[in-house]
Amino acid sequence: MKSTAAPQKEGPRTNREIRAREVQLIDSEGKNHGVVQLLDALGMAEQAGLDLVEIAPNSTPPVCKILDYGRFRFAEQKKAAEARKKQKVVEVKEIKLRPGIDEHDYDVKMKAVQRFFEEGDKVKVTLRFRGREIAHQDIGYRLLTRVKAETAQIAKVELEPSMEGRQMVMVLAPK
Image 1: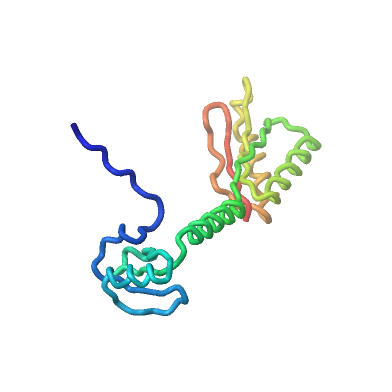
Image 2 (image 1 turned 135 degrees about the vertical axis):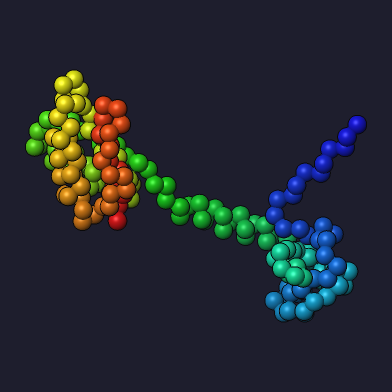
């Protein structure tokens, strides 16, 4: 029978989990004690009633700090939550056009495109050809060129107009 491997612990190593013989020690006040034997560092942490936490495991020797591990974990979770809150997910909004679109309908679609850019989203402009319209791809290309020209001030072309089956597609991103 095989023994199951111990589950990998999330976060930094603490106290007896630290594997190095010597560590760069920083005490609870932030004072650097230099390179210290691991057992001495553990003793100092125990005297202070705190934990020895490996802050920078990849440096030589690893940097360890004496601190309250529970408080440290709580602060890390708060930072991560704050970063997630500030994160903006860029969505790709789609605008569908037809080659024979009327002027007013075109203006309504362009207002929607402008609103999407103000919200920070990308816009995928899809021009669908039906039936015999596919024979007049030049009309569709001119329409997408017009869209590109009108949005040049607020957007940049991420994907030039190209045919995908019976539709022509162009992707615009806000500047």
